[in-house]
Image 1 (cartoon, one colour):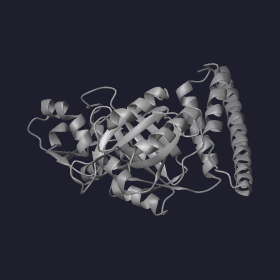
Image 2: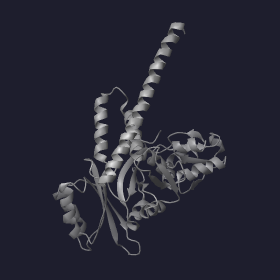
Image 3: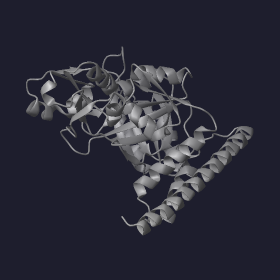
Image 4: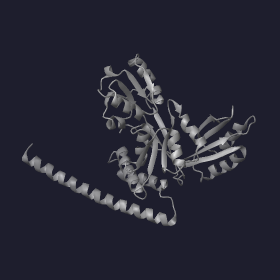
Length: 366
């Protein structure tokens, strides 16, 4: 490298340093304005989170970007900035199925950013309980997977606890086989949550046919076990690899690509309409022929798009069921409002679980 080239590099680096300092100055200014907004909303007793406003920010920035900066990276950078500024208005704690580095933890970080405080709990049931009792403001729970279907413990918890859905996030899940040494020969047991074990069943059967599997209550717990025992392999998240200082044996051992898990954010109050929302209901139908068809007819006549319908048995009542129903739209939308007015008389049990912004896809490979 010539002296002239070295001088040119120094000039470019000084320009970059000046830009970084300007960015920092603007970030400090932005968080100051965010705190002003928080104080003004306190006076007006308004909710601090405005999902419509955030969606408009992303749309404007992506339009102004004109594909100059990678769009996925731009969205992630501003997601972190926006959530950090919003959380500066009030510190929040988010409960999730622990220990650290589970996919629920990763979903929480993707949704709320790194500035939130995170509380690891031993079960999904505990997450619901913490939110219902007000010990944490939010919880994040898995609700369904594109391969293994619904997470029944989450659905059952909605039947036990009075909480509302505040948001959702979808993560494409890529499973990694990890252990302390990084050598597959050292693995004598593979531990993970039952769902990842099921999602990697064929790969394990083909490549580790004689190695037993051990279901545990979370992928984070499996990673902890692998960190403490050189003969245990774990199916765990990328976050767990960093946290527990594990080595990757094989990446991407899931049997099917496009393996995506949908997580729900639960809290005490659903947000205002964003313009791209989903509404969830928990309903019971009349004990008569055609009762469910009556529900579906209402949705059809009101031109409401139903995105999910699933039944769960009512504990202690043999052959009695409640139905989880997801619709596209917000409870403040006229057609959703009309549909709900018509559904209530048809349902001996009716509970609005929340209206919330539909998720943006976020890959779980960071």
